[in-house]
Length: 271
Length: 275
Image (cartoon, rainbow over all chains, first blue to last red; front, side, top):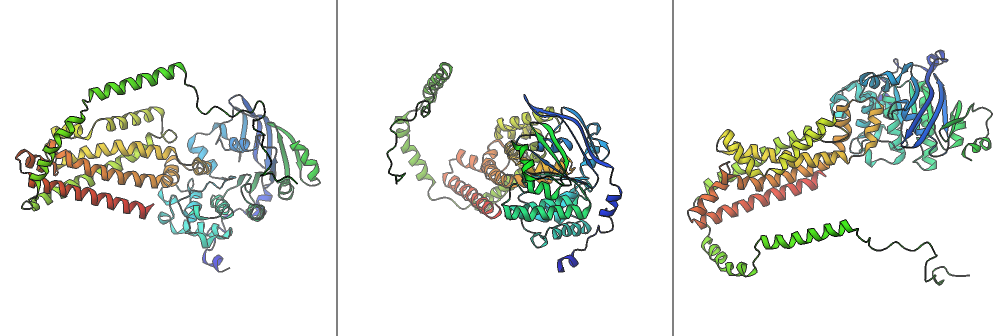
């Protein structure tokens, strides 16, 4: 509590409350239509359709190599799709030029399987990187150059993932679980409307994985953020997803609400 | 129960699972290439006029020269000290400027950071050109351009450093992990943000290492540049040798040795402290 008092959220009144997001429910935050992607002769996505409504949490499951990660990367054009269309927060990403694409990406958090922090920088500087699109320039590169209000916001994000006391530590000295928490704080710093998470706890041991996943989902729900996450933990998919989409060999084979689904039924996706 | 460590092993591997050959037999073209390389080495030995007898016959001359140098003459220590300071100043400023200018050059010469392939090849070409032309030749060019003195030497060292650091900085940036860069791309960072907040910090240890090596190299080079009138202590050494003032030459050589050694020790200690 002491830490919470020390770093009051500078954005508490600016954040979209869960209630307001629910009011906007029905709007589509992500609409993927007929998405195709090949790497060389290997066709990874063969015309996938996925839609995610505002405020919804969708779990994407499937065996290794079925195209889950490629789908997420195509949604942000980290990988250029070969065909189909992606509408993200109401914008066709294929039509955007560099600056417009960066502005759109700024509204979308991405939590990677490996945290992808800059190893030699402090946890605080890594969280401040979430500002890069909102406030370009040296102020978002390293924490000593950042504005006070931004440092406070970054500290607040770190505090929300329980790492305010580790702010000055270099990222490469943190444990796997701590690093992933910093990556989540970096995503929070973006004030995202939508978050993609690519197996966010796959590189963690089971105990740390459960802890980080619970924290991640709780924070995203608090923020009222739309969520699309991939996971091999079927239990996570059922517990944390409102809806479940399964891919197999580059095609969608299942799209159903998680309510009423059983683990045994889902295992057939991996058969 | 059979102890797996004492159980007899099959003397021959199962059919179809033979170990790969220890060495690959070279193809005809590779064999010919090796043969040509060997023949050229033999010719090079002959072309270099290597002579063991010539070396041993010359040893007394070396001993005679060393004897004439002892004891070193320290009467001109003050002007020698000033020249030595000028030499180090040239090396330091040349290195600092070279490192600063080589940073953008290295970014352009890094495949995944360059703004355009044409810029990449132009930057790579420029770095290669700076590297392949020896610093003594650069010094000659700059003596003609800006006249005799340390400014010409500093410019020569700067260009030489740009060639050296540009190549190694670019390689260090090529080798940085792509994960953090992808994460920053995903959150909407621009190219300058990715370079300054992900690539540079990751490559920083290599940058520091290369820069310190570059300072050592520039210190050694700055001694020689004086021979073509580009400032520094080299001209003092040349004059002393030309006038057969071997004791003075010995003092200069010892001072150069002390300077190079001090710079190497300093750079080694900085490396350990920073990295």
